[in-house]
Image (cartoon, rainbow, N blue to C red; front, side):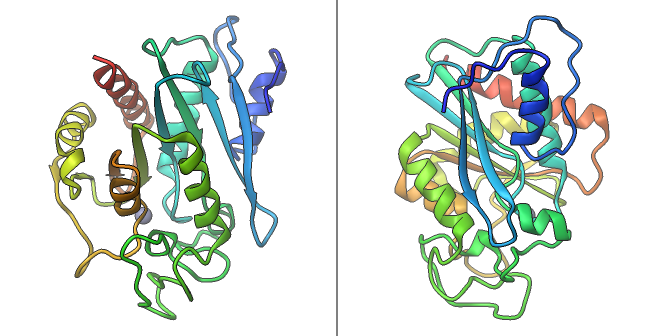
Length: 254
Ligand SMILES: [Zn+2]
């Protein structure tokens, strides 16, 4: 769906679409509407997973930012909100680059304040890459089968359509950029430098099964980075994170 909504509607629209509840405030009068707004899925409890795109829809380079996967890790949503705010205010992306913003891919978990979704599944163990049944009745339950959850299906089908050059998945609280995937290491190190965080291969307790970035790295051969923000992030940290993401788009286009 292409939107033609104009200010002030676009601010309220973005806030609603990205799941913030409140309209995004704008300082600038030059408002650029996102090119595309998509509803990717409605969840078990009626939550909406949506994505908004800025930049040319057919751009060769598509960058995807997922603000939240675990419902008890809210800081990345604020980063997405900051990005939406700047882009809607007219900030330009590099040539031939588009960015997709997903506020949360776990609206039910966000509402409940839980890591897992409404079915008790850790979405970061539910992707098909290397999936294994593990952790039932714990906060890292992989679910009854690979890709069993509507959230996982929505994001994987979305990424299959978008064919991203890079996917950034925000988490908390470990304050590190995970460079587990070999094809993502160089990008991960430069991003970490801009974020002021260390970069290292974090992995999981034991091998990682069914992670989003593992699936993206393998299935799409794309840059796939988990960004772990600290437990508490001040406004300056949110701004710095948004700036780092935008710098990465320029780095990718260099
Ligand atoms: Zn997490």
